[in-house]
Length: 159
Image 1 (cartoon, rainbow, N blue to C red):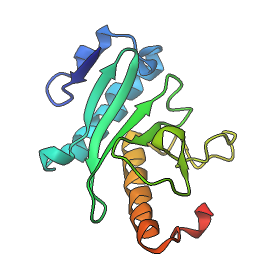
Image 2: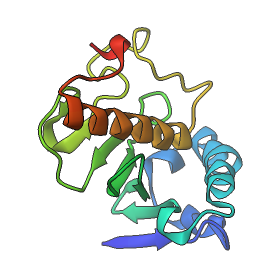
Image 3: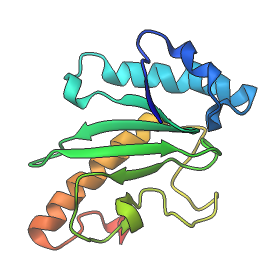
């Protein structure tokens, strides 16, 4: 069952449903004092087509949004896993993509060196929020469009 959460009107309604960020007081605090305000700021003045929607899917918290880094519009979702923010969010593109470098199974984007240890990952829970994952997805999709046109992935640090 899918429930869209209205973050602009009543973020407190989500406290009644079990989700990863709500398993602890620290998780609840992060959701209400960090994640929701950052998403609200991201959405301010943005065209409705490009706003982040916060969705509850069973016990998972999901961000759904559209990105257009260049020529194409992509539907994207970022899943906040139960151990988020210690473990980075998982981002996948719903819009069909050609298989390419840095695209994992299920059209999941390789943003944080999946499979790496916490110390070697690019994800830093002390610095980053779910909106950083949205921005990283935009950058990844911009690289994808360059790769699609040239056959070369434009970021040398990703090779």
